[in-house]
Amino acid sequence: MCGGVAGLREFRRAFAALIFSLFAAAAPVRASDLFTPPDGCEVYLTVQAKGCKVSHHYICRADPAGDQWRVDFDLKGPYFVSRINAETEWLQSIDLTSGEEIRLMPGPADPASFTELTTTGTDSYDFAQSAGRSGTLRYSGFDHLTGRKTVIDGVELEETAFEFREETLSGQLIGTARGHEYIHRGWRLFFSGPSTWEGDEGRERIDRSPVRFDEPGDAGFRSVTPEYDCTAQLAALP
Image (cartoon, rainbow, N blue to C red):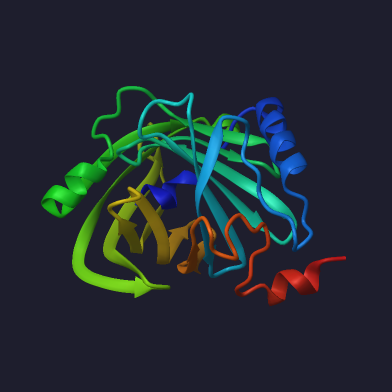
């Protein structure tokens, strides 16, 4: 589930600006353009999702084995980059629009484990992230395989149920989330599903479930143009 945790906080604007420059140069917003990853990296999967989002998953030769990256695009271009390890722990996430980043703090009390989830059917986690101006925040919760499988665009996925809490290190609750996601064992990835976030500002329901998977050779592979649920974004463009 750490997909839900990943985008919540931030880091130094200067570092994010450097990363943004790589992607901005590689990914203009014309529909005919394709995403090009940084040197030494290779894209292996493009995912078109609900909510006007397209994501590219890629691996870099210089990284430790099992690490992989994801970059998300909307109609304006790239806006979010994240890095996970083989156990799907969120090592680093960058908001490209605000210049903010979060990093996993060392020594988590209960590390997230994709292996534990797929072996036993349930994985709990309890870890902290350095979150820029928001300070260090704690996330605790679980993922559980429901036993249900679904096929999206010919790809079989397993459904999970998740819950987690976001709080300060002193124990002040910021919010809670619950919902469903999907996993693919071969790719060692979580994909978003319908979920609900509840905090001081109320309750928000989100569904960015995958709609289409494009691999090398598919027409949509590396496309930077999201294709689903984009009416609102199109109306807002100048």
